[in-house]
Length: 166
Image (spheres, rainbow, N blue to C red):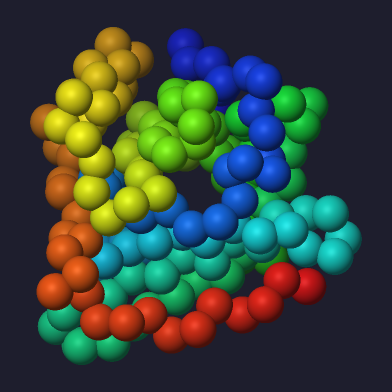
């Protein structure tokens, strides 16, 4: 978790599960060039969380996906998890802001190089987006480096089916 940040408390994983649309992100290698990015969270049989990230590569005209697993880094009512897409290597996943209805989230990775603004819908109200930008800036994230993620349904082809939980 980035130094000086705190994850949300009173976190309810059952409310957080499901699909989220990536509205903006700090760009990094494993998502570079991808549009129409979503993250889908579901419970696994072993109690961990299945994470399926998908994004559309417009140059290759194909969907790319990565499946990982997440578990709580501490107490299950705190929005601080650890996630792995590469075997035993885990990284921090901290929910820094979350609206009461679990419709919008501000999420950080292990340091200030990773930040996502997520929404349950492909768009986010401008006031909410602005509030999350202000929060991220107050936490010393480089918000001027955030990139907007294309989510226009007319631009995003249908995603392949999501594997069932298990």
